[in-house]
Length: 197
Image (cartoon, rainbow, N blue to C red; front, side):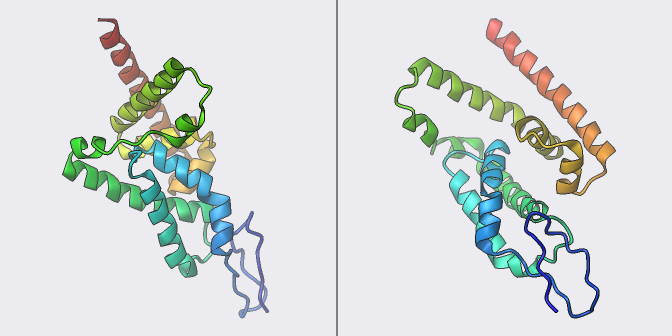
């Protein structure tokens, strides 16, 4: 007997007979369901414009290669998120080794800005500057705090959802989020103070 669980609830609860197995979602289903989340999260975790598409592609190449390993012990989104975090960690380590100067030398304009031909140039410049400041402030946070901050305040996930994604206790996530928000606010206040001088 073969059992297929719905993709919306991919956690396998077990079956009555020993021959039952989880039919995994297809690669296309995984992409359709998780691509927007992966792309935004990669971007918000500080992957540079020039390499964001490559890192996102690497996430899905890895998902494709490892899809047969997915056993349904967690949600598909959690499984993909863990792959994403490993690849982003590698990217960040590589960027630190090479230095930020090299990462900045290949800056590419965000396509959403290019597509908005009616936008006011000063508004576009303000958006780009805000994005740069956000990434600079996120770079000042530890990886654990940055991930929680991005998932809560930018992705809008709840603390229990974040706890499931990062496989941590809810109280730990609340603590990291409070600390991240405090550190972020302090860094933003310092930035404003420097701008006023």
